[in-house]
Every structure is written in structure tokens, then in C-alpha cells.
Length: 373
Image 1 (cartoon, rainbow, N blue to C red):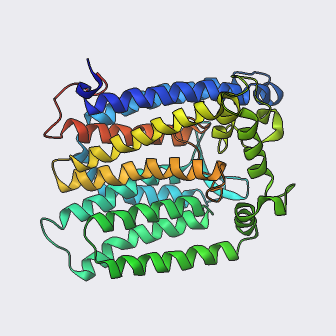
Image 2: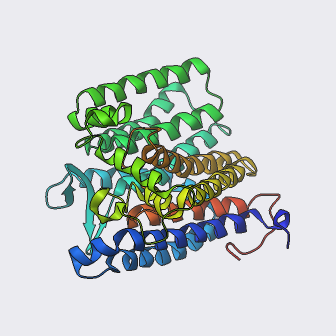
């Protein structure tokens, strides 16, 4: 079968499986020493990530077979549950506090980050609102009431604090408003207010200030705020064209903090070189193209809005992570989808792909074949 005849959903599934395999290999390389030192097993991280990946694939197949219209019907209760979950992270004894933030819940020994799930629930909620206006337009008052849950959710996530996820969710909302045809003057107003709030948040937070300084000039504080960025640059430099070889990188030997999460692409550049990094970047670019293609070949407004929002969620995470490790953007703490350590993010990203696969299956130009088959 030629590449041109491979169905869209199969291309997406194969790429996701490939990313998961690369993630397992690079995660083992990144965490073998750390796992042995901290937990007495070099397989500690990779086995847990593998279990999450397998479970996530099962969940992805389930969501690929559930009609996306059903999630829109549940948009209001899903949004209410999402707000309650995020609010619960701030309740003593319920939420889990770590690294200066209250972003996690502990459920049956499993730590879960509700704001990850917000990338899906907020998109479902807002896409359903935009789709309904095609049938019965809302008045300004009705719009105002329906937008309140979005502002409440964004405020709660910002309060955790999690500026990166807040900005990402806001970008999804604004982008959906753009493709829905909102007048440019209103969009510019949203962007202006959002920009002012982001600047205010940065100026009133010492650690965010340090991140901005590290982005503008990491060598101004090479042993402090600029340390991670400089070590990331050194990792890429060490890799040169073809890399130092899989498993032979030095950055994972505690030279580069968070190498298994935010900075795993730096390890890829070191061990697989410029060629390996560019190859993976090319696949991510093609993956982004396929995801947006899902949205724009959808049969109805709901599928278009939902597909675009979910695709944008994944693509923005990829872009922000790669921009951070290469110094093109400030470091935001977003993991690289399907590859970085992080079971909550991995499962949520696979659910996102599952919903997109269902949109593909219902597309009028897609043959009806089993998802993933």
C-alpha cells in the first residue's frame, strides 16, 4: 500500500505508537541512573510509564469508538466536574502540594493533575457553545453567563499556580473564537487584556522573573536561573551531527535538571544528534498537519471546533516544549507529548487523540474502518 492510500486515522495511530516507543527508549536512557539511585531500580520510571502508555492506548481506542457528539451533550456537567477537581487540589488533605504549587490529587496511590484534563473538558465545553450558535444564536447576556465557568476554571488554574497551562487554555479559547469568525477588534481586545495579565503575573512572581531573565540572557546567571538553558545548549552541542550514541549522554548524569520531563528533547539531541532531533521534529510537524486536517475535513461545526481545539492543544504543547529547550521561548514546564515522563499528561494526550480519531471516523471522506485497524 502506498503512503498516499493510507487512511488518515492510521497515519495518526502509527505516529502516536512510534512516539510512545521513542519515549520509552529515551526515558529509560534518561532515568536509569536516577531510578537506581532513588528507588533501587533502573526500570522504575520506564515500567510505570509503559503501564500508563498501555492503559492510555486502551482508553484511546475507547474514545475513538464513542461518538464525539456525546461528549458535547455532557459539556455542562463535565465542566462543572472539572472545576470541582481543580478546586479540590487546594483543599488541605485532598490536594498534593509539591514544588511550590498545589496542582495534584492523590487517588488510590496515583497522583493526577486535573489541569491536564482541562485541555479536553474546556475544549469540549467551548466547542459545544460555538457549535450551538449555528442553530440558535445566544444573546450577549446568555454568552456572558456561559463564559463564567471558563473564567472560573482559568482563575483556579492560575491560582495553583500554573501560568503555563492558563496561557495554553486561553490560547485555545481565543483561537476557537478566531476560526468562529469573531471580529478582529474583539480578538485584539482579548489578546491585549491577556497580554497585560501575563506581564503582571510575571512581574509579581520572582521565579517567573528569573525564567524571563534566563530566556533573554541565560549567561547572566549561569549557576542559577540560566543553568538549565545553558546545560540544554551544551547537550545539543555535544551531540553534533549524529550524537554520542544511545545511552551515552552525560546530561542525564544530573548535569541537566528535569532531563526526563521538560528537557528530554535535549537528551535526544545529545544522544541522537542533529539528525535524530530533526527527524523527530519533522515527524512532529507532519503529525501537527494531520491533526489539523482532522478538524478541517469534519462534517459539522462541532467536529471542526472540537477537532481544531484538541489539535491545537497538542501542537502548542509540542511547540512550547521544543521552544523552551532550544531557547526560542521561555521554559514553561510543559512536557513533550508522548515522550516525556508524566503519566497524567500521557493519558490525557492519548484521550485527546482518541476523540480526534472519532472525528476522523465520522468524516464524510474517510472510509469506515476500525480505529487503529
